[in-house]
Length: 76
Image (cartoon, rainbow, N blue to C red):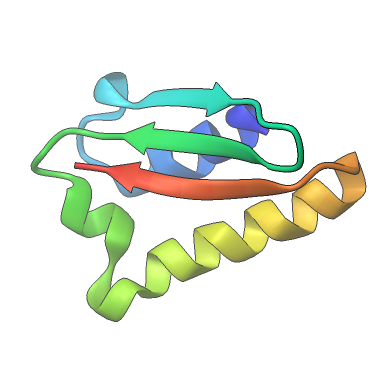
């Protein structure tokens, strides 16, 4: 899941070397924390949160295939 997210986000941001993805496993849901450069936070969130919503939708679709629940948190 982390590789998929990193691939997508790397194409969006200006500083792909600063992408940090951390997965926190829970009993029912795994949380994926995404950190990017402060200059790239707006690009990852998008206007009115559209890109963030799209990233979450992709994660939801991929999590169904993996049989786990994932949620995305963008840390700035």
